[in-house]
Picture 1 (spheres, one colour):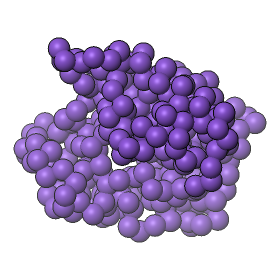
Picture 2 (spheres, rainbow, N blue to C red):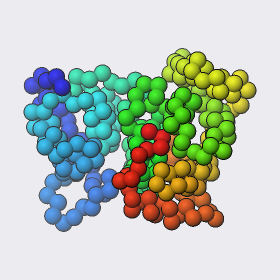
Picture 3 (cartoon, rainbow, N blue to C red):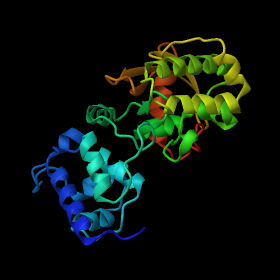
Length: 289
């Protein structure tokens, strides 16, 4: 990575320290033990939340580190529960362009992150209205695969669903038609809720119309309907078929959704999800990724 100016390095470190100090450990799932000597989070806790090494994060706070990547900045913004303005400021201090709205590095509302952090044993993730995954908890990664590596149009699971056969392995083949129709109806509803000047949804729809004859045929039927509560059958590469309820919490503007997955009543999915928590991601190849 390219080096940063010393003044920006220093300011970046000071900003990270100030944001770290204001967070109560309990707000992000850490125990406030009697031996805690610092206000807010410790450096190692921020590093853990952001998926960084402790040494690397220490260098950032000391103003001695290299220029953080955009992915690391997004992880730090979420770990420190930054507001949208604070997130933009962090990117500018690091000399990185502020991410376009709707991509994998989009700002996630701190309230949604707080809820996600409390769902420690329940698979949950935050996605955009175009089905771009912004953040997943470990049970969601174990259940659905790791979605963090996708960029561009492929960041949207709907786009991958219609253009990449591997993405459809997450569902039984018998359910593919139902899921395709639901995705298209949801996308039409989401696009209609956006501002008329918004180009992100239009660009994605145009790309899918060109790339997928099946999408084009379903789009021409003009079905519309947001996905709120679903009962899904998911295919896990190790545990097989798991039937779950997928519940949604929408942000005020409808651009983001917190999804969480509970075992479907009358199935053995509760035991399978418990087993999945034990297995973690050790045997998971990532059906959706």
